[in-house]
Amino acid sequence: MDTFFAPAERAGNEAVVHDYNLFTSFGQVNELINALPFIAAVLNEQRQVVYGNRPLLEAMGFKDFEEILGLRPGELINCIHSREMPGGCGTSKSCRVCGAVNAIQDCLNTNNKIVNECRITANQKDKEVSYDFKVTASPFEYQNKRFVVLSFEDLSDEKRRQILERLFFHDIINTAGGLRGFIEFMEMSSDPAEHKEYLTIASRLSDVLIEEILSQRQLLAAERGELKVNMKAVDINKLITETVQQIAHHQVAKTIPIVFVNQQENLNFTTDPVLLKRVLLNLLKNAVEASKPNQEVEIGFSTANNNEVIISVKNDTIMSQDIQLQIFQRSFSTKGEARGIGTYSIKMFTEQYLGGKVSFVSNPTEKTVFSISLPMA
Image (cartoon, rainbow, N blue to C red; front, side, top):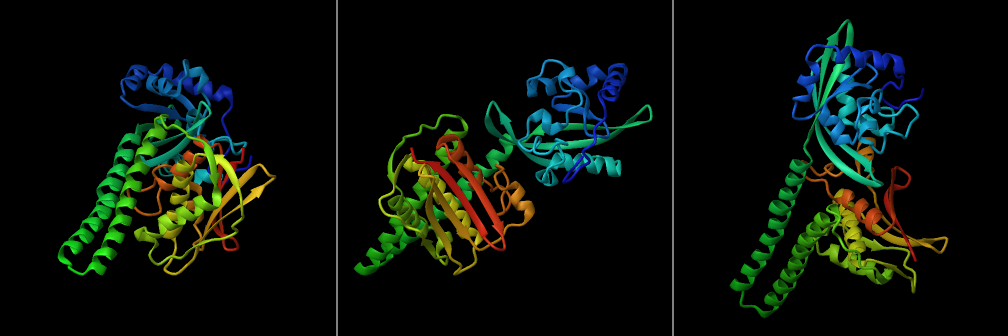
């Protein structure tokens, strides 16, 4: 069976049930494993569940162990990549960068306890949900058979807090500090021309500050399912032009020209302009931050089959394969620790609220292009 990473072969049902019976008859193991305050499972050498605790069943919405026997961790959680290949969890390209699969494989290969962080995007009730876990894989041998005891500790709230602290206590304070600096310049200057220049810059910085705060408020509301969508007719040329002007005032865009290409006349369609502008701002900000000084960033749009608007943002920096495999995960970032919200929010706003789709390519021929397609009706 084909695989892009971990072995695809599985133990048969009879072997899985045999291992399950081993553990159910293993002294007080049931009471011991159920006493653990976190999710825990026992895996065979093929990474299949042969035993688990009650918190595991409750967290995944199962009633009996028989429902989960033989499944792999990503299949339990319903990871979006667990069904991409016939071999299931561990065999897709994205599994190469999965902390859980790597922890299990390293544990089996070295016979040592392995601790990793793991980001998983799962499909829950037709909605994508992001998780951050600390996974611990410990080797265990019983009756001449090798097993892995795998535990999951949910770090989602901690990671979320770190990201928000980073945004509010770093990015927003930096912007507020710049605003204060220009106000101080105004207080020290008696030149009317300088006053006017500083006032213009201070006004732009205040707009950026408000946008950053509103962006986080919208993101939190979206994750809670409380964000209200306000659909109305939108002139796409006007909206893109306003977005380009807004990002041009941002600190990160000082040395990066942003070019609006493929403009078309009289194209209007129905969408939420506030959310769409938020998506485009994040796309442009990411593209600008990935670019070197004086490299152009392009934004443009086209139509497909008269029922779709496709907006694309291009920059010249090519992403590595590992980055491409993790790009839409919530806490993943190429910008350092405790970042990682831009592409995640782009996907969430576009696909869960605007009814569109997000895609990207990144290669030497096309460079890096992120595209969002939105229904025109």
